[in-house]
Image 1 (cartoon, rainbow, N blue to C red):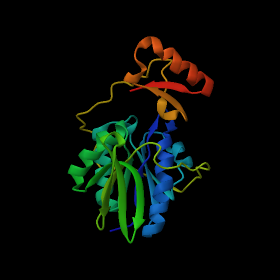
Image 2 (cartoon, rainbow, N blue to C red):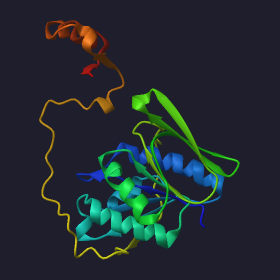
Image 3 (cartoon, rainbow, N blue to C red):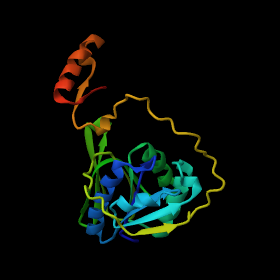
Length: 235
């Protein structure tokens, strides 16, 4: 079994997601500890330019028209084939809409255990130690995988991202799995309405809940948020 760490690089509208950089930095640390390499897996069509800034030790780019947009069936087939072919120690993906769509499916397809909601990863004595946030963060559960490969879905913001995002050698291959008979089809991407705030990108939040009393009191929270230069969020 190889000691390489595979990282699924997420991208949308021609831009890599921040979590891709976060995971590749952590993957390099783990790969160094295990004696392998951090390999980013980029799936797409005509998206090779994105590979230049991922920051892994190397990039495996799979180019196919069926991968132009995220399709859980297509991505799942390709990743399952790559896992079988490459035999990595760890496969990292985001605990995002993409990763949550793929994680359980890949676990069943490959027979590998899945550790989800992960906000901590470390190599200790040759074993992988994963810390998962459960019950909305009320409990931190630690799992130790002493041998064999596994799948890990990581929470956004759990690991710092590299500022440099340096380039890496890119290996471009055709899809290792057939994609001509997909049952799932991408129809269209519905963008969020203008004016919505992405709270995952905010360094500071003034968050309110039932204690605010009523809608008329939200102005108080907004005044504080304005003074701090941040956004208001609610449970």
